[in-house]
Length: 386
Ligand code: UDP
Image 1 (cartoon, rainbow, N blue to C red):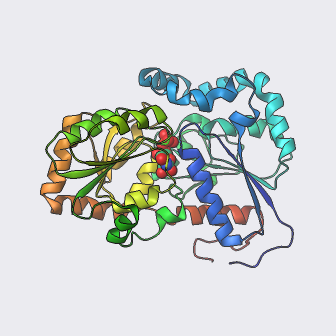
Image 2: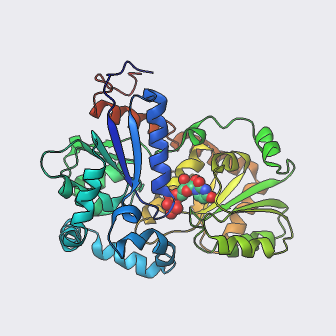
Image 3: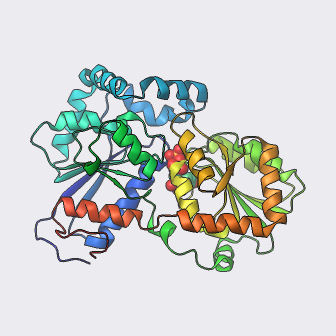
């Protein structure tokens, strides 16, 4: 812990439950903040869409899973709105509708610092805050394909997960001295050393004598998760399936009804993702940035079966270029990769090594240090100062 000033600064985190990644990133940073500064700082998360935006925008978190179920539409919306001029048009078009709500949020949450972990929170709240305002920091939670709405030149600092995202920020005319590469924030339990797989499996009640294949579709259980699970189950591979459907309760019910060839555990939304990853041998997932970062920390080879066009395209490139997994959008390709990694443990082991090299377990702590520095909790910040 560090020596702290007496007045408690108040930090407000602007997030929304469009997917599970923005909440997970916020929680991970807040956890690291309290680990470093104890209760000398007050933190609060605000779902700015659900709790403040006027209708119909306040329904975005609810309808998001339906919107992204039409990937072509989502990809087209991403592409059309991406770019500096387009981002400016989006902001000025919607500003008259959201202005009052944005100003109300700012008044309700008097803060010494605002932290945005959502692309839609930047320009609107910077506009609402006006010229005399507390520091505003953006933490970009997309790995590579970072939409222009992430980058507003008025932000004091923009923290990004990868060098590719830094290049994008500069491309969108952000001054290089405002951008820092910190990695993707993950919770302490996800960044802790991998530990004893045997014990974790025992605690979860999972078998010790089978390869465990973890299937996840982000916080909302998206993409052809059921199709992939069925293909693995019917492939003849002797494995244990762990399928996490997140908030997709319809899919959870459907999968629980099914009779499986192999041992299969079906879960809805779980708070034990770090244990699940540490107890597994391979993850089959959509290309969500949070899940990818957590899998890297868990040294878990990744099979990507789906992606959101636009915002998750770059995540696939990242996984391939770091050699931490494969892109396998067809069930047959998933089964082939699993077969290869199971029959050739040395091949899986190479991927595990690449995961170890690519993981950034210090990301949340680095962000907490930078934010603490912004509000005067520490003055001599350097990554090794505490
Ligand atoms: N997650 C979770 N429990 C679940 C399903 C997902 O905690 O049952 C978390 C997962 O560990 C990750 C986040 O939700 O931190 C999903 O984020 P990601 O960026 O991968 O995808 P998104 O849901 O935002 O599309």
